[in-house]
Length: 117
Image (cartoon, rainbow, N blue to C red; front, side, top):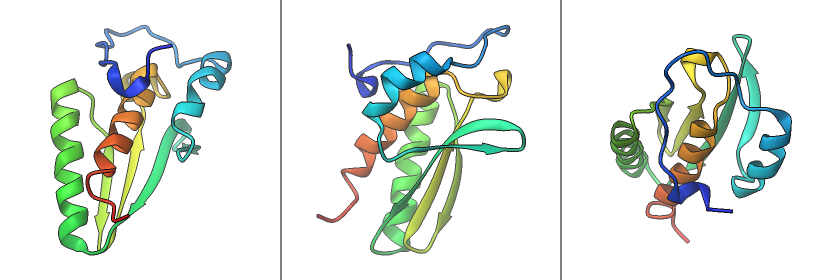
């Protein structure tokens, strides 16, 4: 199976259904630190990243924003001192699409550039 972070998003043209439990079970292990939560009646992928300071958190936020623009798929980003909360879901279907998992994996890859080891 191709790694999620290496895949690109496919445009949602309307009428798609949210991803099913079987496919979630198959691909979720590639993003183990993400939680599936329900907010406003919709399933979302959510993760909090921690950083040494605000400057690093905002740089990470900007990098995620650049990746989102490139893929045409945009998250909710909450940037605070030392942390960024990222939420992915597909607004047009009111839930999760494979694109959300792809972008979560890409977000994890971006984070490795910013998180101190």
